[in-house]
Image (tube, rainbow, N blue to C red; front, side, top):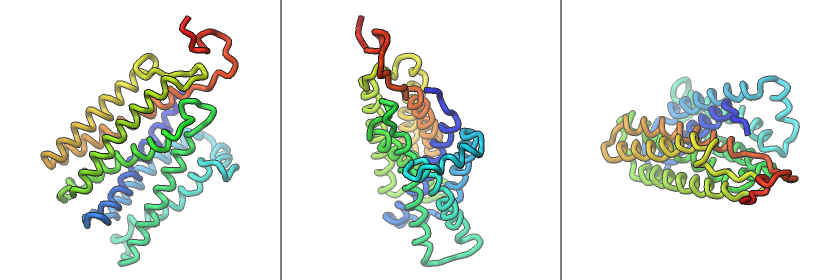
Amino acid sequence: MQIHWPLVISTTCQRVGLGMYLCALLINWTSGTALPMNVVSLAAIVFLGIGGVASVFHLQSPSRFFNAFSNLGSHLTQEALITPFLGIALLACGLNGFLFDIGAASFALEAAAGALALAFLVCTGLAYQMRSRPAWNTKFIIVLFLLTAAEAGSVATMAACLGLGIAIPDTLAATTITCFVLCALTQIAYTRRMRSVGYGVNVHAAERPYRTPYIAWIASGIVGTGAGISLALLLSSFEGAAFALAASALGIASWTVLFFKGALKAKMLPMYPVDLNLDI
């Protein structure tokens, strides 16, 4: 499948920004950390805005945008319907404490924005679970989408803590390590599954034309992110956390490129032996 670079940028930014918001919100609730959610919300809006601009380049024309609303049962339609409400909620959270102060009601506002952020991520993940693409016809897709958002979000929250001079809570440290390990294991499992999806469209990630994004994912998403997380946790290094965040984002982008490359259409009526995966 052709690589849709605007979607690579868009989905990467969505996962980093919304994952960061959700993780920061949960850490504040569970650990009593005083991360300023208005600043976190504004940062999430920036990421979401970059992703939105990239999506505009993907759609290219207003007609394609309005056609997205034609089927209310479509996850893409649901994502489009959630977007303005999510943007308004995040903006309200971002301005709370700067232009106005709603006091105790902040909890409800932040929770509403969190629910919309999670719904947005779920709808986007489900939109890529397609029966017409054997490599995408699996529950792995939504799990991977949410896990990568959780990993990038926890790393971003760790960087925010260190940047603001806040000690990383044990809960956040454990969450970051857990998300990183689960994400890597699930991506490896998905890569193995791609070898035997059948229909003449099996994908061997370590071979051409998939090898370059596969190696880039290993280098950035596993080695780079793991090294940065280790430095951040062992040395309380903001630079380490920032490096881990950049590596995690690059890993997500590399994985998404591999994801698109592996989304081949099923060959329902094979004409050649290679289409049947016959070793002849």
